[in-house]
Length: 205
Image (cartoon, rainbow, N blue to C red; front, side):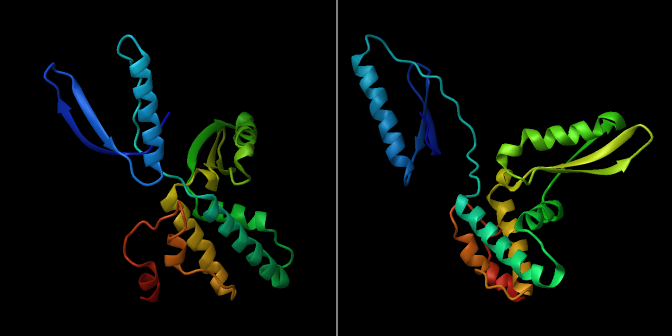
C-alpha cells in the first residue's frame, strides 16, 4: 500500500507519542482513502492495536512514456531527413549519439584484460531497459583502461529528459522538421523544464 502525499504537520500526544499528518491530492486522494479505510476496518475487527511498518522517501517522478514516444517520433523523422543527404542513418543510431553527447556518465577504471568484459556486462545487464546503455573506452594505459558508462534515457528524471528532448528538437528545427514549442513540451506529463521562466521567451532572446 502506498500513495504520494505532502507532509503537513506533526503533533505530540499526551502520552509522548508522535502523530504525523500527510495530505494527498488529485489522483492520490483515492489511494490514500482506500488505505485509510482498510486500516480502519482492520482496527475495528482486531482485538488489539494494529501496527504497520511505515517507510517514507522523497518523491521524484520520472519522465512519462509520452515524452519518450515524442522523442522517438522526432528521431524517426530526423533519421529519414538526414538519410537523404548523408547516407542511411537509423533512428537507433541517432538515439545512441544523443546519449553520448547529452547524457551523463560514470567513469570507471578496469584492468586492460577485463575492460571488454566490464563493457559487455554493463550493456547486457541493462539490455531490458533499452539500447541507450552505452560504454566507451576513453584511455588505455599500460595496465588500466578508463571507461565511461552511460545510462539510457529510461533512467532520466523529468528535468534531464526535458533537456534531452530539446536537444533533439533543436536539431530537427535545423532540418526544417516541425516540432512542438518548448512550452508545449513542458506540458507533457512527467517532463518539466529546470526553470519556471517561459522557455519560448528564452529561445527568442
